[in-house]
Length: 182
Image (cartoon, rainbow, N blue to C red; front, side, top):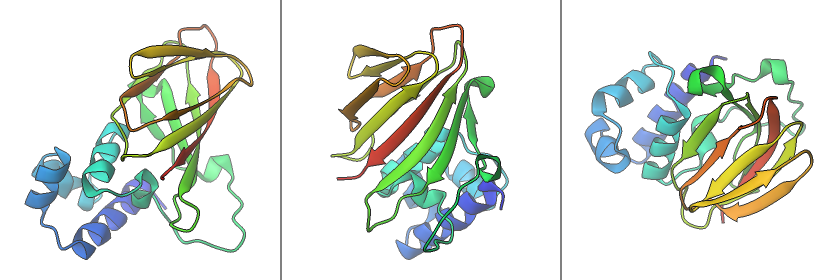
């Protein structure tokens, strides 16, 4: 299923479950009512930043908006994932395992091409990220401090503060990321 339609269905269901109007969601998230309407109808491909604004404003996990039917065993093939693309295709986010209330985390594979970057707004209070780099190097800035990761280096940090990822190198970097909601 197309990621836009999944986001549309989930956003509408969450909004209706919380008994919120589009106006109320706009005030909570900082995303315009017209953009929210387009997202809910599946007419636009929302950016990662917009999905995070909606998730934070509604106090839900990022992947609550990307969730799909769960099975006892879930095999995820990369080619079957609808990636979220930012920075003119230089930052690609593959949501692998979506948030589940019973396990409190979600996992991603991130690919950042040379020169690619993304700035992330603070996540929900108490949220933590666990990141491991593979191939290449990445600079992760957490609350104004830069941390450089090379192949198989890992970092853990509270992500309820501003943080960013950038690839200053000349080769792509792949990251494995787990976001834990405390």
